Image 1 (tube, one colour):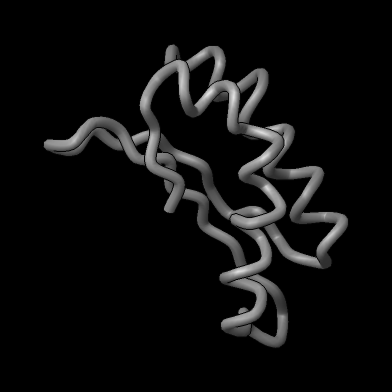
Image 2 (cartoon, rainbow, N blue to C red):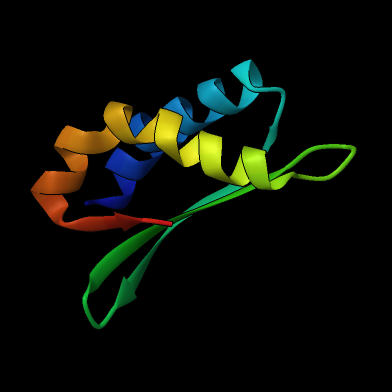
Length: 77
């Protein structure tokens, strides 16, 4: 995935979902690893993230990114 695609497609999707869920998007980055690439999304909120936040955000985001993820073999973390 080129950096431009991360900026123009992935980050806006992450930002929109974070706002809908009452979260703050801190950063989105794409890291190379042995098994491929990992999309890392850093979130926060004033009272701190709960385990529910950490589980529900990726579940809600995954369908929005699924076709892109398959194309570049990303692991969503």
